[in-house]
Length: 311
Image (cartoon, rainbow, N blue to C red; front, side):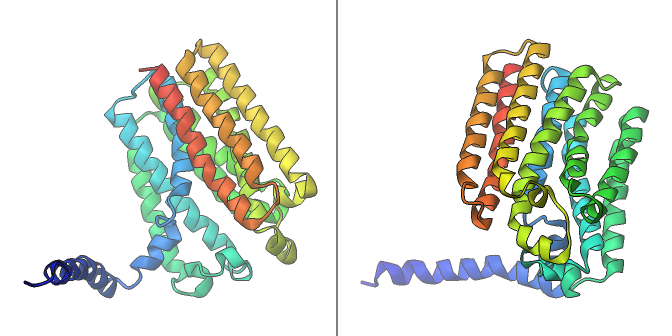
């Protein structure tokens, strides 16, 4: 009798080869595709999650629950498009610096795998699609979207001018919340602005963790960040920002008269923030990056609490 492995393995190998072949053919026909994916960070979706979660917080709170398919689709796709365009803008601004930083040395514009014109065309296309989505909402949302592009466009240059570029990123990444309120109720309420402040504070905290990865390289090439500003006090300052974030979320609960699911979500998020303090205890690159990635779970925990509370 033939061995079972001789019956199973050959078909399995053919299946694996057949799955890989379309991808290889696609890369052969479109050789720049992997570089475009790297340029937009679609191969690293953590940034999409960190931008999407607070936007969804705003959508759910502005609508008292499920916002409907129209707004959900507009803002979800908008997050993906604008985050991708923002990554391109960042790489365009830093293309002469990225090669000197360990983490960014292989980026397509730094290595010459893509031309500046390639990046500009793709960024323009993404922003045009995002604009089309925003046009299905209202004038206030459109005006806020234009302001969002301006804020996001200035961020890459702030690291050359101030030790607080993370504050600008916090505003840019949290801007989906006032836009969500504008699109949902036609104005940005007190609740919307408080949630915006909470999110911006959280973003400064986790982007400082991210900046800790590059601190040595940034000091060497003259790039500024809160990780450099805080120095040996980085853990303390991150902890203070995280505490302020939780306080803001508790104030949100007071305004909305939130129930136990909301508090459970905030509590779970708080435990994760404490775990991040453990991860960065040695201020290492690996620990800082792990702490940064963990914030995706913080966003999910808080959204779960909001969504269940408003169900």
